[in-house]
Length: 254
Image (tube, rainbow, N blue to C red; front, side, top):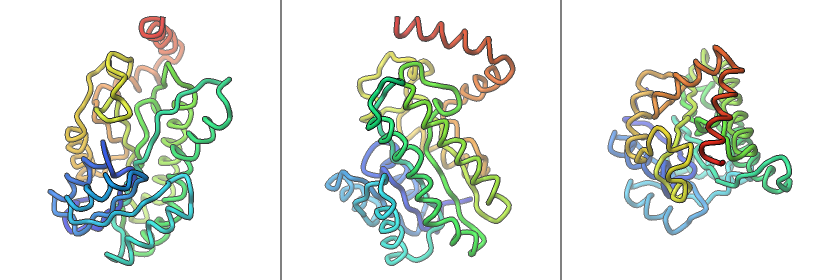
Protein backbone atom coordinates (compact mmCIF):
# COMPACT_ATOMS: atom_id res chain seq x y z
CA UNK A 1 0.00 0.00 0.00
CA UNK A 2 1.17 3.48 -0.84
CA UNK A 3 0.84 6.18 1.82
CA UNK A 4 0.01 8.95 -0.65
CA UNK A 5 -3.57 10.14 -0.30
CA UNK A 6 -4.30 8.06 2.80
CA UNK A 7 -5.80 9.10 6.14
CA UNK A 8 -3.51 7.87 8.91
CA UNK A 9 -3.69 7.58 12.69
CA UNK A 10 -0.56 7.02 14.81
CA UNK A 11 -0.47 6.37 18.56
CA UNK A 12 2.67 7.17 20.50
CA UNK A 13 3.06 9.98 18.00
CA UNK A 14 4.67 12.67 20.13
CA UNK A 15 8.24 11.42 19.87
CA UNK A 16 10.57 8.66 18.72
CA UNK A 17 9.19 6.13 16.25
CA UNK A 18 5.71 7.67 16.11
CA UNK A 19 7.05 11.14 15.36
CA UNK A 20 9.40 9.82 12.66
CA UNK A 21 6.56 7.91 11.03
CA UNK A 22 4.30 10.96 11.06
CA UNK A 23 6.97 13.06 9.39
CA UNK A 24 7.76 10.39 6.80
CA UNK A 25 4.10 9.76 5.98
CA UNK A 26 3.64 13.51 5.53
CA UNK A 27 6.62 13.57 3.18
CA UNK A 28 5.11 10.66 1.23
CA UNK A 29 1.94 12.65 0.62
CA UNK A 30 -0.53 11.34 3.19
CA UNK A 31 -3.91 13.05 2.94
CA UNK A 32 -4.10 13.48 6.71
CA UNK A 33 -2.24 12.44 9.84
CA UNK A 34 -3.75 12.20 13.31
CA UNK A 35 -1.25 11.72 16.11
CA UNK A 36 -2.11 10.58 19.63
CA UNK A 37 -0.11 10.53 22.84
CA UNK A 38 -0.11 11.61 26.48
CA UNK A 39 2.70 14.16 25.93
CA UNK A 40 0.34 16.92 24.90
CA UNK A 41 2.75 19.78 24.16
CA UNK A 42 5.12 17.62 22.14
CA UNK A 43 2.11 16.09 20.40
CA UNK A 44 0.86 19.49 19.30
CA UNK A 45 4.27 20.29 17.81
CA UNK A 46 4.30 17.06 15.80
CA UNK A 47 0.75 17.66 14.56
CA UNK A 48 1.66 21.19 13.53
CA UNK A 49 4.73 19.98 11.63
CA UNK A 50 2.62 17.58 9.53
CA UNK A 51 -0.47 19.80 9.22
CA UNK A 52 -2.35 17.19 11.20
CA UNK A 53 -4.53 16.67 14.24
CA UNK A 54 -3.35 16.10 17.82
CA UNK A 55 -5.57 13.97 20.06
CA UNK A 56 -4.51 13.33 23.67
CA UNK A 57 -4.94 9.62 24.30
CA UNK A 58 -4.15 6.98 26.91
CA UNK A 59 -4.01 3.80 24.83
CA UNK A 60 -4.54 1.63 27.91
CA UNK A 61 -8.14 2.89 27.97
CA UNK A 62 -10.54 1.69 25.30
CA UNK A 63 -12.68 4.81 25.56
CA UNK A 64 -9.65 6.91 24.67
CA UNK A 65 -9.03 4.81 21.56
CA UNK A 66 -12.69 5.12 20.56
CA UNK A 67 -12.47 8.88 21.03
CA UNK A 68 -9.28 9.04 18.96
CA UNK A 69 -10.93 7.19 16.07
CA UNK A 70 -14.06 9.37 16.31
CA UNK A 71 -11.99 12.59 16.26
CA UNK A 72 -9.94 11.42 13.26
CA UNK A 73 -13.06 10.39 11.34
CA UNK A 74 -14.82 13.63 12.19
CA UNK A 75 -11.89 15.65 10.90
CA UNK A 76 -10.84 13.62 7.88
CA UNK A 77 -13.28 10.81 7.13
CA UNK A 78 -12.39 7.15 6.67
CA UNK A 79 -9.22 5.88 8.35
CA UNK A 80 -7.01 4.03 5.86
CA UNK A 81 -3.99 3.23 8.05
CA UNK A 82 -3.87 2.81 11.81
CA UNK A 83 -0.43 2.57 13.41
CA UNK A 84 -0.78 1.21 16.95
CA UNK A 85 2.64 2.25 18.13
CA UNK A 86 2.59 3.36 21.77
CA UNK A 87 4.88 1.46 24.12
CA UNK A 88 6.58 1.62 27.50
CA UNK A 89 9.76 0.38 29.18
CA UNK A 90 8.64 -1.02 32.54
CA UNK A 91 10.73 -4.12 32.96
CA UNK A 92 10.07 -6.97 35.36
CA UNK A 93 10.33 -10.64 36.24
CA UNK A 94 7.89 -13.13 37.72
CA UNK A 95 8.32 -11.54 41.16
CA UNK A 96 7.57 -8.06 39.83
CA UNK A 97 4.32 -6.55 41.22
CA UNK A 98 1.15 -7.15 39.25
CA UNK A 99 0.82 -3.43 38.53
CA UNK A 100 3.86 -3.55 36.23
CA UNK A 101 2.63 -6.70 34.49
CA UNK A 102 -0.81 -5.16 34.07
CA UNK A 103 0.61 -1.95 32.63
CA UNK A 104 2.73 -3.88 30.12
CA UNK A 105 -0.29 -5.97 29.15
CA UNK A 106 -2.60 -3.00 28.67
CA UNK A 107 -0.19 -0.95 26.56
CA UNK A 108 1.62 -3.67 24.62
CA UNK A 109 -1.39 -5.92 23.97
CA UNK A 110 -4.79 -4.48 24.82
CA UNK A 111 -4.06 -1.18 23.05
CA UNK A 112 -3.74 -3.18 19.80
CA UNK A 113 -6.97 -5.02 20.62
CA UNK A 114 -8.80 -1.75 21.26
CA UNK A 115 -7.52 -0.30 17.99
CA UNK A 116 -8.66 -3.34 16.03
CA UNK A 117 -12.08 -3.22 17.66
CA UNK A 118 -12.40 0.42 16.67
CA UNK A 119 -11.38 0.22 13.02
CA UNK A 120 -11.17 -3.27 11.56
CA UNK A 121 -14.88 -3.78 10.82
CA UNK A 122 -14.96 -0.46 8.98
CA UNK A 123 -11.89 -1.45 6.97
CA UNK A 124 -13.51 -4.76 6.04
CA UNK A 125 -16.68 -2.93 5.00
CA UNK A 126 -14.74 -0.54 2.74
CA UNK A 127 -12.62 -3.40 1.39
CA UNK A 128 -9.28 -1.86 2.31
CA UNK A 129 -7.15 -0.74 5.23
CA UNK A 130 -3.81 -1.28 6.89
CA UNK A 131 -3.07 -2.10 10.53
CA UNK A 132 0.52 -1.68 11.72
CA UNK A 133 1.19 -2.85 15.27
CA UNK A 134 4.51 -1.98 16.86
CA UNK A 135 5.93 -4.89 18.84
CA UNK A 136 9.66 -5.59 19.09
CA UNK A 137 12.31 -8.09 18.08
CA UNK A 138 11.79 -9.26 21.67
CA UNK A 139 8.38 -10.49 20.52
CA UNK A 140 10.01 -12.80 18.00
CA UNK A 141 13.09 -13.72 20.01
CA UNK A 142 13.08 -12.75 23.70
CA UNK A 143 14.41 -10.23 26.20
CA UNK A 144 17.16 -11.36 28.55
CA UNK A 145 16.50 -8.58 31.07
CA UNK A 146 12.70 -8.52 31.29
CA UNK A 147 10.04 -11.21 31.35
CA UNK A 148 7.18 -8.70 31.36
CA UNK A 149 8.45 -6.98 28.22
CA UNK A 150 9.23 -10.17 26.30
CA UNK A 151 5.96 -11.84 27.24
CA UNK A 152 3.71 -8.97 26.23
CA UNK A 153 5.64 -8.32 23.03
CA UNK A 154 5.23 -12.00 22.10
CA UNK A 155 1.51 -11.54 22.70
CA UNK A 156 1.50 -8.45 20.47
CA UNK A 157 3.04 -10.45 17.63
CA UNK A 158 0.53 -13.26 18.16
CA UNK A 159 -2.38 -10.83 18.06
CA UNK A 160 -1.12 -9.29 14.82
CA UNK A 161 -0.84 -12.80 13.36
CA UNK A 162 -4.47 -13.52 14.22
CA UNK A 163 -5.57 -10.27 12.59
CA UNK A 164 -3.67 -11.16 9.42
CA UNK A 165 -5.15 -14.66 9.37
CA UNK A 166 -8.69 -13.42 9.97
CA UNK A 167 -8.75 -10.33 7.78
CA UNK A 168 -5.82 -10.50 5.36
CA UNK A 169 -7.96 -11.85 2.51
CA UNK A 170 -10.72 -9.32 3.22
CA UNK A 171 -8.77 -6.27 2.09
CA UNK A 172 -7.17 -5.47 5.45
CA UNK A 173 -3.40 -5.59 5.40
CA UNK A 174 -1.57 -6.26 8.67
CA UNK A 175 2.09 -5.79 9.57
CA UNK A 176 3.93 -6.08 12.87
CA UNK A 177 6.92 -3.80 13.43
CA UNK A 178 9.72 -5.64 15.27
CA UNK A 179 12.88 -3.55 15.63
CA UNK A 180 15.82 -4.10 17.89
CA UNK A 181 17.18 -0.90 19.43
CA UNK A 182 16.03 2.43 18.01
CA UNK A 183 17.27 5.77 19.33
CA UNK A 184 14.31 7.04 21.37
CA UNK A 185 13.67 8.27 24.90
CA UNK A 186 12.94 4.66 25.88
CA UNK A 187 16.44 3.52 24.90
CA UNK A 188 18.60 6.47 25.94
CA UNK A 189 20.09 4.55 28.89
CA UNK A 190 20.52 1.24 27.07
CA UNK A 191 23.68 1.85 25.04
CA UNK A 192 25.78 -1.28 25.10
CA UNK A 193 22.82 -3.47 26.05
CA UNK A 194 21.91 -6.71 24.27
CA UNK A 195 19.27 -4.88 22.21
CA UNK A 196 22.12 -2.76 20.81
CA UNK A 197 24.08 -5.80 19.61
CA UNK A 198 23.26 -5.13 15.94
CA UNK A 199 23.43 -1.36 16.23
CA UNK A 200 21.03 1.39 17.21
CA UNK A 201 18.90 2.74 14.37
CA UNK A 202 17.72 6.29 14.04
CA UNK A 203 13.91 6.59 13.94
CA UNK A 204 14.16 7.95 10.41
CA UNK A 205 15.92 4.77 9.27
CA UNK A 206 13.13 2.71 10.77
CA UNK A 207 10.60 4.83 8.87
CA UNK A 208 12.38 3.87 5.64
CA UNK A 209 11.81 0.22 6.48
CA UNK A 210 8.13 0.82 7.23
CA UNK A 211 7.55 2.49 3.87
CA UNK A 212 9.39 -0.27 2.00
CA UNK A 213 7.51 -3.02 3.82
CA UNK A 214 4.16 -1.34 3.26
CA UNK A 215 4.94 -1.25 -0.47
CA UNK A 216 5.39 -5.04 -0.37
CA UNK A 217 2.59 -5.55 2.19
CA UNK A 218 4.75 -8.03 4.09
CA UNK A 219 3.67 -9.11 7.55
CA UNK A 220 7.05 -8.71 9.27
CA UNK A 221 8.63 -5.27 9.40
CA UNK A 222 12.26 -5.88 10.36
CA UNK A 223 14.36 -2.70 10.44
CA UNK A 224 17.26 -4.88 11.65
CA UNK A 225 17.33 -7.55 8.89
CA UNK A 226 19.49 -9.92 10.95
CA UNK A 227 16.47 -10.60 13.17
CA UNK A 228 15.15 -12.89 10.42
CA UNK A 229 18.28 -15.02 10.68
CA UNK A 230 17.87 -15.21 14.44
CA UNK A 231 14.26 -16.36 14.05
CA UNK A 232 15.37 -19.09 11.65
CA UNK A 233 18.08 -20.25 14.06
CA UNK A 234 15.57 -20.31 16.89
CA UNK A 235 13.07 -22.37 14.92
CA UNK A 236 15.68 -24.82 13.62
CA UNK A 237 17.14 -25.75 17.02
CA UNK A 238 15.31 -24.37 20.05
CA UNK A 239 17.65 -25.96 22.61
CA UNK A 240 20.73 -24.53 20.94
CA UNK A 241 19.06 -21.12 20.71
CA UNK A 242 18.24 -21.10 24.44
CA UNK A 243 21.83 -21.98 25.28
CA UNK A 244 22.95 -19.10 23.08
CA UNK A 245 20.57 -16.76 24.90
CA UNK A 246 22.01 -17.95 28.20
CA UNK A 247 25.46 -17.00 26.95
CA UNK A 248 24.12 -13.56 26.01
CA UNK A 249 22.64 -13.27 29.48
CA UNK A 250 26.02 -14.05 31.06
CA UNK A 251 27.78 -11.63 28.72
CA UNK A 252 25.47 -8.67 29.29
CA UNK A 253 24.02 -9.27 32.74
CA UNK A 254 26.82 -11.22 34.42
